[in-house]
Image: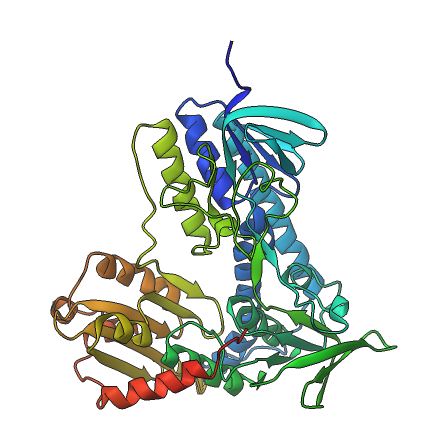
Length: 472
């Protein structure tokens, strides 16, 4: 008789939990997984997938306009929000079914409901208890609403915005991180008048300074209003169903809806972690070592609930590494360095490696190469949009420490460059690579002129970063 019901019990059916459970099951482990919402988690149902579908849909308004420069006459287009929203929901529901089938094919038992640790080897779900030799916590994160804003109960989160009953004519977005800038582009493209409200001077706090400045300017050029150095004091619900936002300086912003995109926090409350001896930090993140092991030897955690590097592919890689280590005699750790990332803003952003500021802090003297140009497509479309590319190079070794881009296809281009950065490529190797012409990507291997006066640039970026302390 087995001592436990399962070899592994996973709490959470998002990217990390599913990846780990499937791989463990494929190696013959007896695995169960519980989920109280939809299999696939935030990425499939409330994040990456539905967001990208909406980004595609929202970009058509510019495509119709740009077509005129290429000789096309396009009748005045109309847009049906309900049709796009329902098509998006249909696709995410299909993907949820795919996840269920993949788990089933790997021999994983799926239990519906939210799990809670009763003791270090027991999980309770919907009143029933299951024992397991090892337990994995993979419950992800949830949107954060600041409690110090009066009337915050009138604010929506990204979960709500993806399924608006009707498209708001005026939308206020508080916060300029991934979610804020992505949804600003989406709803602006679909026809809403969008106002983005920031505590700091530019969007995407934590990204390279040039990326932040360029994207902020490009958003404004498209017609998105960006309010900087602005703090919301309270939110009032109007009689007509709209909202009034009062700033600390006494100004008001009127909108039909307000979306708070001020970050996410680990979804760890109510899991019984502390009772089982699992340590969490002040934000509620489960504390783990490099092997994703918690303070309890046989309890592990991966993904956003650990608040390490909150990206879907990272959660998947952490989950797979854990399964390899525990159930395939193949010890493996997730390497969190030089992980590429993308922001599906309009225009999009792609980055890998260190920002200029980070590189100077860690490596001292660096060489900076920056290119800014109008994409070939817009020479005929007439659109006033520019692309920015940047290389950060360690001066002493000429190793490329960071690649950054704002412009069309940035995520696709940076994915390829991420291989080079991961392999430690030098600027000379970039220079020796023949570009594909005519493409935007070739600019990364043809940049030869260093940006002058790097110390002045550093001073400027220090001041820029100092001004965004505590920004969304």
